[in-house]
Length: 114
Image 1 (cartoon, rainbow, N blue to C red):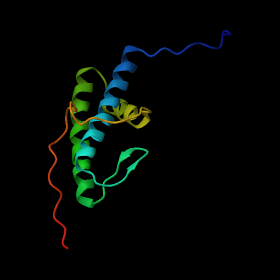
Image 2 (image 1 turned 30 degrees about the vertical axis):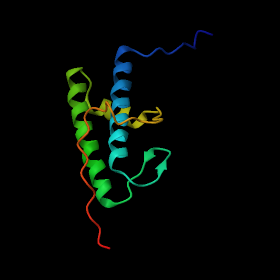
Image 3 (image 1 turned 180 degrees about the vertical axis):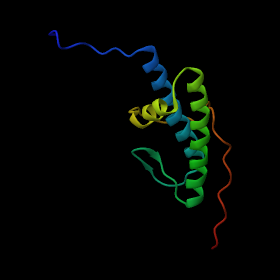
Image 4 (image 1 turned 135 degrees about the vertical axis):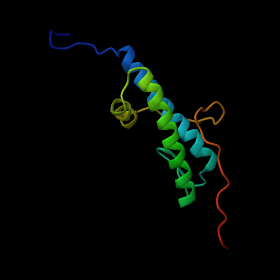
């Protein structure tokens, strides 16, 4: 390694941000799996109807708000958390619904005419 190179080591703050972003994605995907009936894609299960989309959006907003409040208590601002959530590059293999915190209770999908 020359004088211009250095090894990057995450700070405690970096680790906290990563943990919060991971929780956001994990909790949202766990909820999504309880209400969505669409195909599973690269980013997890997809909503099949506008009602499912509304349910997962409402949950995502609730999870984000809860994490923003927690981040603020730890000295992390809303924009910094948003950036960490957007840049998160984790994986969600076999997300288990059990233990997911911050999820709203799923509601039955609206009946469709037919």
